[in-house]
Image (cartoon, rainbow, N blue to C red; front, side, top):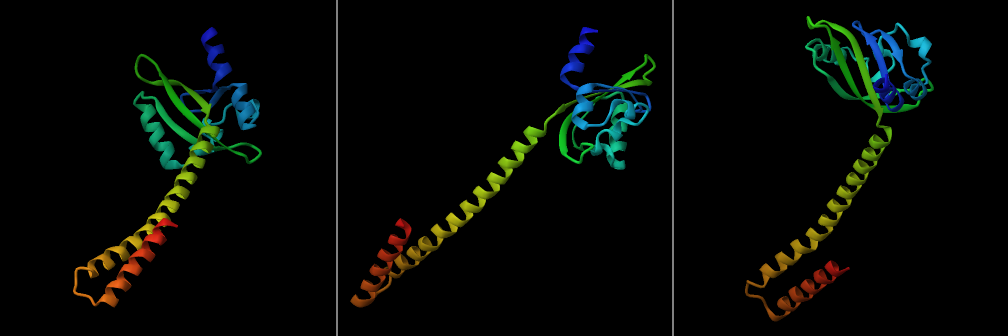
Length: 178
């Protein structure tokens, strides 16, 4: 009882029968999803989390659980009011001695803030990559010019041509310094 209370008070919890129909849903999940407990009893647990509605995904998850293995994943969900949220989800099959699934325990935690932070980091990284590309391009152009101008100094040049090359080198160096 203490174990159930500890998990129920800190996690988003569903207990379902062997078919995946909800027998229990704790108040934490009810509050987060905005789906009333009474309306979900007897429904498939995949109906609480919109991230589980894809047939291929459901098949993969059930194949994993039918082997008696714990399924773990991150699920994209939509609350009753349309607000989006993310959960990390563990679906744990409880099996009989014969290996037949008798219950499913679905334990989730809200990872919306973490996913939001990851999204912000990804956006920042993309922006920084764009800045780095622009900066490297701005650096490569004068360096390329300098290399070409320095190569010209290896050829016989008139005094006037040599002076023009040196002025051009000086101009490119000033561009690099800006």
